Image (cartoon, rainbow, N blue to C red; front, side, top):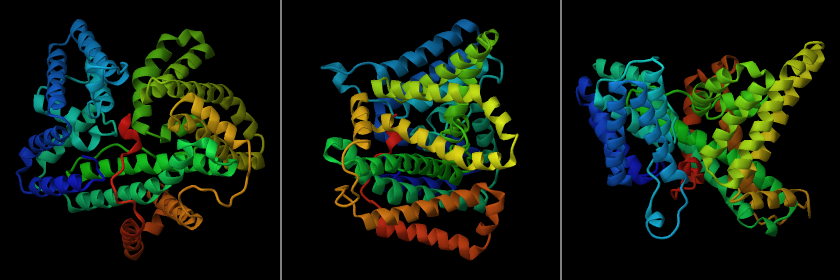
Length: 458
């Protein structure tokens, strides 16, 4: 039941209407029921397995002790490896399906167990709250990865309120609208030329391949940030505030800052549970310890996407980016401080360099294999550069219209995040003009046939 399907919209409408009329103290348990129902639409058997895993985590954390917690960590990791990384062959393996949201509930389980083990928090005594944390339906598809203490505080807040604030509900609906606009109007339209070129790169000239490579980066951002907006908006309608997951990543001045702004909850998770422990273990190694910690963290992100060669190459590329950037950053900062003019040039140039580094690395996320990625790069620098008769499956006029929608999307991002721009959002006529424009563009230009979200497969 994808967020962009009629089934989900009907489910959401029925769930919200019933949620608003039940007593506040019962809201958390009702959310658990809704989450189980949502998961059962995918697979009843995997729902049962999720309940079993939750029970094991609950028992191990409640018992405490190093052996119990290390045992349950092993079970969680083996569960992930079995379903996500084990090879699929004939027979039983060919019939095994990926459990819904396995990567995301695994992250939540690991962070919860480690936080209890490190005594950052006490074990949750209410089984249903822990089960809701792992299965919360707006977040289980693709995040954001909310920390357990934050989530439990949100549940307590929701249950203590006699009624949900109207502003919270309406802001959630507006965020959902913006997410659908990103997905249906921008991402799914950009998918047309991307699928054409990446499907058969040898059939297209250099100009078409360059366009497709840039389109994929923008498609991935609109698709994933749109999914996140919908997820955060749905949770907000039910009174749950989720952490942000994107913050204008393509304006980042360096690759470290890019990862602080892209899939922010994943980066934060990797920072706390991979990078910091490794940096502590290698603290006497100097720069080599920093490089080892950065490389391990970025390889973890690459392999999280998948264990195929192209994702491993993606992890290696990001490891090189991060290591070089981290080592040279103090030197670059020192040079920039010597000249005001140089500092201004740097503030304009470095985001462009970072963006293009990201664009090239994302080829390995979209390509079916490392070999196809190599073919894409070859086609980018060979052959005809004519911009006529590109054969992208979309007219140039339609493509230009999508570019205008991307500009609108970015204007909204700037007004949401920048105090200097936020004043433009205050007049009621401006806000509602944008809302109606987004709704009208979905109706007139949206790709209304449900298409999978890109990060759903991860």
